[in-house]
Image 1 (cartoon, one colour):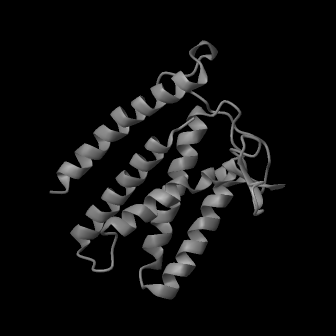
Image 2 (cartoon, rainbow, N blue to C red):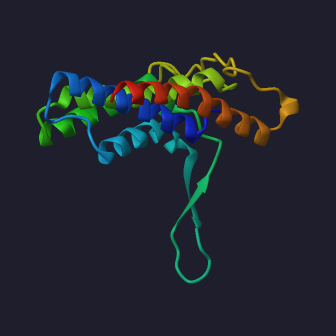
Length: 184
């Protein structure tokens, strides 16, 4: 399991590289500022939306009723962790960017990179695999190498998440520092 820390750092790396590229190309409408960084972080985390399930039971029993929302592993790593979802997000972001700005190709590519980074990180550590080619196939592809140290059942889930977060901070944080320093 990749942690939100890893997905956030990967989004920051994609943002920094795209910002640096725009700086050298001297483009005015480019990835700059905290809003664009936040956009990249949201897109890099978007595939995990399948972790949220809606139920028909009331969320609160104390006076007002809402549709129940619960966190569930049942649907996690489903269609939102596929190349089809990446293409869908790229198209939606590209169309919206085309309506509001001129550089729709750039935003489509950046959004695709953010979402595909999530899918690639998860396929390396998900032991149940991902439906990578959904909607063409529901076959789960397993490439779990547990990057870099792997998962052992003796480790326990919490230990695995903590170790994964530390690994991601060390590896991706180092990459982020190198990229950030070369931007100056």
